[in-house]
Amino acid sequence: MEQSDSLRLRKVNRIKTIHSSLAIEGNNLTESQVGDIINGKNVVAISYIG
Image (tube, rainbow, N blue to C red; front, side, top):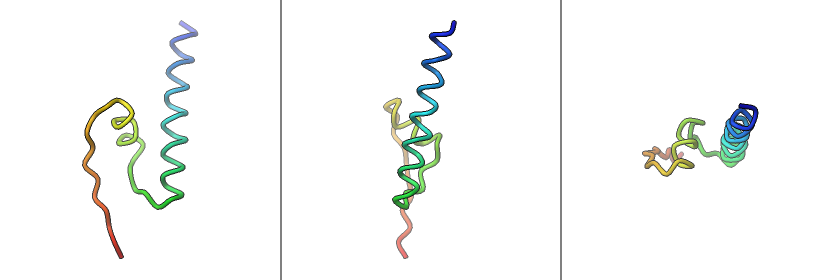
């Protein structure tokens, strides 16, 4: 059980780290969208220029 909890926490932390790095660069993907990308799903993101 501890191993599955550890893997889940590592995945959550990875998503949060990637999301934070993207946000610093001005990307507006949500944590959920980042998670979907990691899981191989397609994500529609809208880019605002201006």
